[in-house]
Amino acid sequence: MTPTQALRHIGLFAAAALLVTAVSIKPVTVHAMGTDTPYPTTDDDGKKKKKKSNMIEQQEQQLAQEKFLRDYRAARQLILAGNYQTGIAALHALGHDEHPDVANYIGYSFRRMGNYDQSKVWYEKALASDPNHTRTWSYYGMWQMEQGNRLKAEDDLQKVKLLCGNTDCQEYIQLKAVIDGTGSY
Image 1 (cartoon, rainbow, N blue to C red):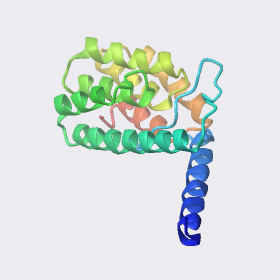
Image 2 (cartoon, rainbow, N blue to C red):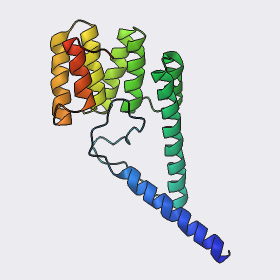
Image 3 (tube, rainbow, N blue to C red):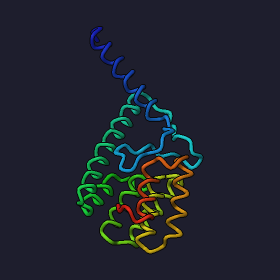
Image 4 (cartoon, one colour):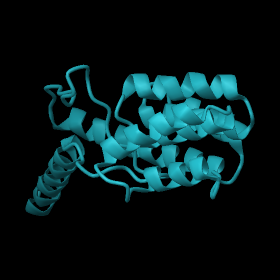
């Protein structure tokens, strides 16, 4: 191996190690409505799933995460464009229905199509995966309003407020507008 090739390998390994480290840090910010970067899932103890692996396995994991993000973003764009059925199929194709962002957008799509029973199933699946998933609580509150259950929607608004720590986050603002009748989503 030439010195140039060795430096390339070292640089590649260093970049992979930095990315793995960055991906393993749980963000402390609240995820805004419509984020295209879902956060990593955690195990039952709330700790990152750790796996002893060598650099090749870490690179494979990095590539898998990049593919997941790319495909998730494409599915999300389909949904935001109103192509709900195609977006749902694309989300299912990710193979991570248990991921709270995936389950949430499936629930959102069903709600937008008027299939409230399926929407409820998927919102509850998202919350079972992450009971603190602010976006899902907000969307579920909107679902409650569409069902005529204002009191439950107001309960969900309070959960969003507690999770955000204030009333300035988009999840709170949008659900509050729906409850007040000044907005729809």
